[in-house]
Image (cartoon, rainbow, N blue to C red; front, side, top):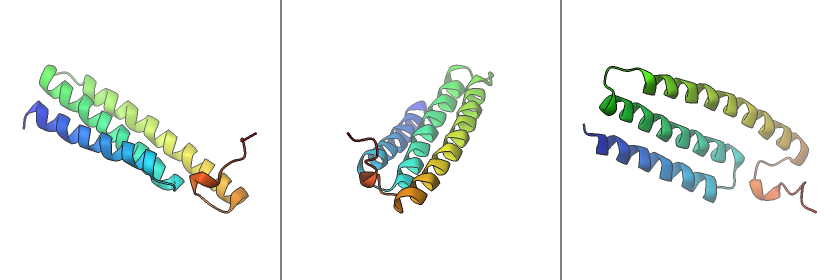
Length: 101
């Protein structure tokens, strides 16, 4: 496979994730879409590493770091969703107007 094929798949994942963040109302779907965006970044890092520096593990190292950050983001995000559900009895983003003046 060529670098362009990897970048095309990464761009498709990024666009799907961006659409999910902007168009969905459910907070859990938004969190999953953010994970898709992280996976697109991981795919690009590993692909660039494979084609630019084939023997070096830097792309994989950055990808593992992003996976760890994504796991921490998922834990914090799910804790926030649980707290919001306990207060508002919904997980729809349009119903969270607590900070509006």
